[in-house]
Image 1 (cartoon, rainbow, N blue to C red):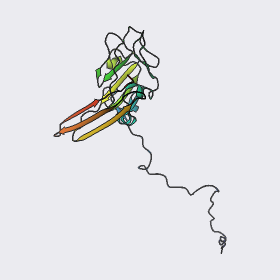
Image 2 (image 1 turned 60 degrees about the vertical axis):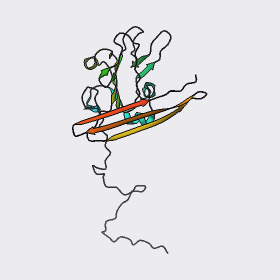
Image 3 (image 1 turned 45 degrees about the horizontal axis):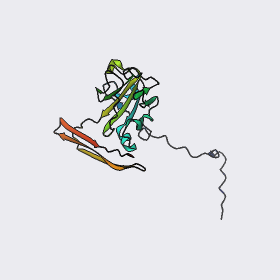
Image 4 (image 1 turned 90 degrees about the vertical axis):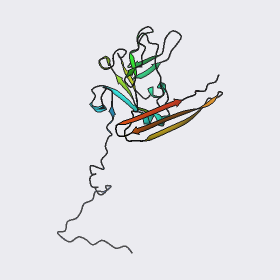
Length: 219
């Protein structure tokens, strides 16, 4: 049987609960509050938070690239706004374009490419555009705007940096990957990737990584 709630006596405080609302929850503590990870890059040749760099820097982490199966430049160019590739044609060479700036067919590249801190551009013409495998990278960094002060020539429009994972002290680490590619109406082949980090004492470590990639085709 239903029972009616007793009416409050005169002078008693009556709680007011607005219709359609729920009881207020206690504010979240600092540990429960959402926190943003601080992404550290070496875009200025020193470890620095990407939020502290007064320039446009786009970063893709190596873990993200491996999870996506990205293996070549074209796989992640689409993820960087303002970055494009102009493929080679009969009368022109392949070019990397940042913010619409690209070289002519006889000038130097306007976008420099570095593997770590080693420049990989052709010092004479625009014919060399490296496309390394992205396995075991720490970050893939795109710095937009002139970077001649830090990285020299061929950086009028910006710089692309492949930053490999450095050896880690005190950590044994091994990882590997196997991919199998099959081309419709064509061939099929596997590709292997592996990396090994070996610490030696407390002050020395070695890291070795490699890729054996086979790209099948129709012919």
